[in-house]
Image 1 (cartoon, each protein chain N blue to C red):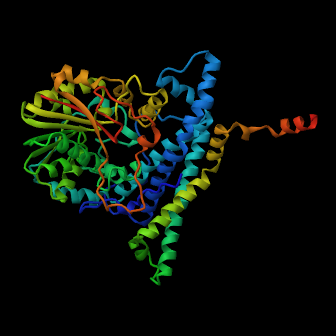
Image 2 (image 1 turned 30 degrees about the horizontal axis):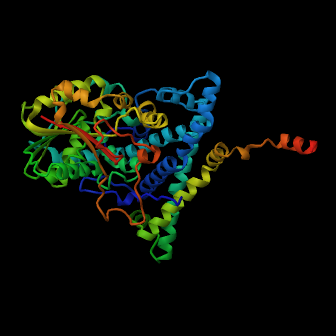
Image 3 (image 1 turned 45 degrees about the horizontal axis):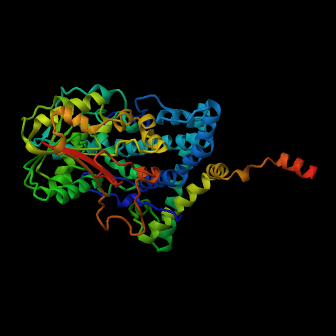
Length: 120
Length: 408
């Protein structure tokens, strides 16, 4: 094996100034780590799904069987649907913020509302 | 809107040289593919809402003026919290995809280098120039956040850049380039066969061919032709040649060279093709290489290019911004320059006659049956841009691929 540091090289930074979009770069750093952790949870969930399907089929649950498993059309659709649902769940706040952009009536200030109704 | 589910990574095409992609690596690619689809189809439309409802009115209120350029939209959007989050996620997802793909290749690099050598060693169809200089525009920035770009080598006879490119294109494009990554090349062949049915090229040059994914359909469509694929990245060329050999193509010659320094016979090619090449090329090099292409072409030859369409005066402001986005934030700095270039003027300066130029569009061509029947493949650009523009010669109607070119 060549003497290379696989993780260091896999993580290498692309040449060119990296853009940061949030006002504070620390927010971007935390988001990036959070998404990496979310990715790894999805990986574990897909592995668990494979284990469940092997068990259900009465197959031995071995590392080799897990790695050799290929989902059929139905199973792969269920797994992709899980990813889609999962992503929708973890990005909830992003979608709520989008709703707030698109529908101003969702953005009433509760304190102001209380004052308005008190006056009435 | 019903969920759009992309095909799973295990349906990505394989060949004798393909790296091992284990269970968890496949799952990681699946997650990232789905995330790309979600960001493109579910989150990014919100940027348009933020633009219309918040960013544009705020700019008007603060300056008393209307937004006019895509750069102004970019700067104004940077203050919007919804856009900030989408953009951070999008950039991060690209970086994650690069990390995931590189790790797959790096952990088995010795084996893959050895396999590639087995296909490459002693073959006359592969030319690596150890003294070739990397063009400065390519060396200055790593295109689409691919660390080390197309040319860097971490071991002797390296193939990392090529193998990583092939492993990841499915994830970035959610399968919309087909399982072999050759959707562009297949579409080009359809276009040429339909528009120019009598065209029978004997020598074909694919400039900036990368690993040749889009070159091989040309070689398949014209099996008697001599096909030459040129790229400035040695790891791309090594991987591309080994891959072509593994797939049984022996009529494709791979040459490692900077297009500007290409030493081939003038007046010798019946067809010169570029596919998604110009947007990764500096403006100066586009002019010089188009001239070079004209010199290399045989009289009566075809010059054909595939790109996203350039802007026209009618391209809506917001679409200009979304289509320029990768230029600023996905390390593809020349794309925005290309968007406002007059490609027909470039060709005219290189010696092409205006009355022999043309443009047009063609749809994506994905072989039936390679992906699950429930899956769908939608390109991100198509999802994000309502109006794909219409180009100068007006033969383009918003298809997946924009083509332009000329006859010598």
